Length: 341
Ligand code: NDP
Image (spheres, rainbow, N blue to C red):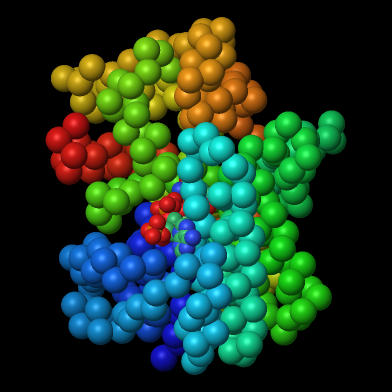
């Protein structure tokens, strides 16, 4: 039976990947930072298992991206490394290394341990942040897998964008120079939505929560592409057996939508809720950004159309991405049902 190591199994995406792996008959060794998190993962995936006995194929190891402890032993007898762990926040951080160090050093720790253990297949969770933090040239219509964020440019310099770009770069570099026998695939999702498996959901779901809570007096003029968490997990799992995916990057993205369209969709879905649908003037956004890191991080994207192509995944994986309205409504219904929103 193929054994898969999943780092960051306690994450929003990590739990969905763990669930799909178990439902597809894989043996999963999951890394978490504490035993409490192991219990959390078991509680989250168990209700969704097709065969309840599959939970016996799940085991845990405690690892930290910032420490060497345990990595080498943890990767023994593993066939596939799925490295999803990385800190994800769009809040302002005082020191960018709080994100960059675990992202880059953690990726290299996982790869070195995998290499030492003879693991030949790696699936890495990267991001469109590692792709679209650079201006397109005049001849380029959309961002695709050939684009790389320039961390020295204004579009690529926010700490999270840097952390994902430098981590993915370091991974390709390590494999090219130190471990050519490893076949790696990166999955580069856009903003991930879709019902979480428990209430410990990450940053992307909390952005939708913000709209549901009417936290802002108006909606930013911001469009972004969305992908459903089940599609992201499916791409990770299906990569394992896809020979053509070796050595490739794949953007995971469904359609684009604006904040105002999201707010209107939520207003239609929950007419009783006080949801703000009016557009925020640009000046207001700049003022709010002085006090709010989440707002500051989106300023460069205001008013710009989304130009990102997931054609490679659509043909390579035969993906028909779940439509964005379904992902948004299902996420919002989860939030309303579980958080009393
Ligand atoms: P979460 O915050 O839910 O998950 C992050 C995971 O990384 C958690 O398991 C967390 O562990 C773990 N982690 C963070 N820091 C460390 C550390 N120092 N040592 C060990 N583990 C650590 O985020 P998502 O599920 O949304 O993100 C998962 C991956 O997907 C990340 O690589 C992210 O960059 C990427 N991604 C996410 C997108 C999105 O919209 N959600 C879009 C594109 C890419 P713990 O539970 O202990 O905190």
